[in-house]
Image (cartoon, rainbow, N blue to C red; front, side, top):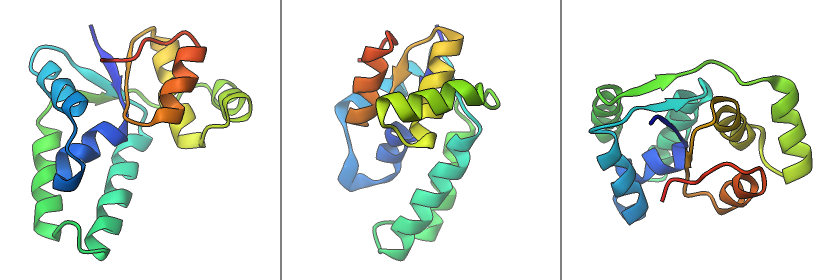
Length: 133
């Protein structure tokens, strides 16, 4: 069964100081399942990684290698979720627009959500979306 992959999980694979057991389990799932993402996923990743480069947390070469390795995984962008649903989630669940896009996609596709973000996880549970554990 596919699942929605939040950038927080993928970023933990790139940043050694943010390793996480749940994220490791999600990466293992990608050997037998595929992940879907809103298109913002790739931009969000690149944005955070370049900020981390500026702060000296990761080297540009490591970012390049990470993005290349990530591109080889079964992760497919699904386009943009319904804007009305995204904005409802932003307002009712106090999420960022980015996080609401992940949740809206999981809801519309009726698939679980893999995230390390506590606020997004709580909102997903409230919305009846299964969380990858």
